[in-house]
Length: 238
Ligand code: ATP
Image (cartoon, rainbow, N blue to C red; front, top):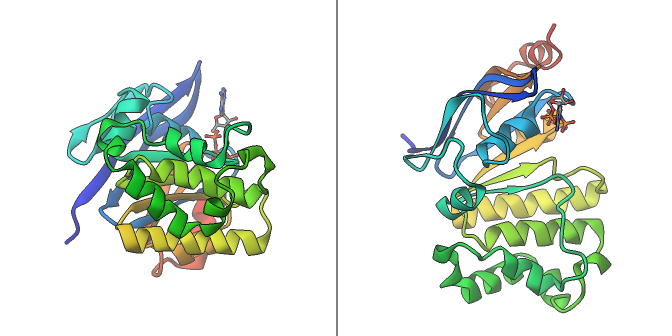
C-alpha cells in the first residue's frame, strides 16, 4: 500500500455568497498521478488554489505530508513540497530564463541544492539550457510552460499541480510536455495532479481520477477501470 501524501477533506470555497467549491474531497498517494477533470467552471482551479493557500476555504481540511496546511501561507505550502503551475505558465518575461528558474528556489530547503536542481532541470529541458540567458518573453508558448515547470521544480516539490497545461499549445507541444511530466514523475517520484479538460488524455496519463461538477467531486476511481458511460454522466451531470 502507498502512503497518502495529500488529503483534501470536504473543502468548501466561497466567492462572496457563491459556493464555487462544495465539500470537495480528494486524495493523492506518494508518487501517484491523479487527474482532476470537469467542465469549465466546475471549480477545479478554485479547489487547487484553495489548497495552495491562494483562497481561504470556508470549511474543510487539507493535510499534506502529515501536516495540516489548511489556510496556510502559500510560501509555507511550497516549502512543504507542494507547487502549482498556473494556467498559461506565467513567466517573468523580462527576466532571463535562468533567473526565472532561480526564483523558484526560495524555500530554505531548496536553496542549498539549487545548483544541482538547476542542472537536473536543464537535463529535463535541454532547450532551456540553450536559452538560459534569453529573456523568458522571447520563448515560444511551450518553452515558457517549460520555464514554469522548471521554476516549480526548483522548490523540490513532492507534488506538482498542473492547471490545464495544454491550454493554447499545439498537439505536438502538448505531447512533448506530457512526456516530460511522466519523466519527472518516474525519475523523481514526484506526485502529480493534472487539471485537464481533455478527459481521454487525463485518464491515459493518470493512475486515478476525480470528476468535479458544480463545485463537487462527484466521481472518482482508477483511471483504467472507469466505464465510459458512468464517466460521461458524471462529467455532464446527467
Ligand atoms: P476552468 O476550466 O474554466 O478553469 P474550473 O473548473 O477551474 O474552470 P473555476 O475557475 O474554479 O472552475 O470556477 C468555479 C466557479 O467559480 C465558476 O462558476 C467561476 O465563474 C467562479 N469564479 C472563479 N473565479 C472567481 C472569482 N475570482 N470571483 C467570482 N467567481 C469566480
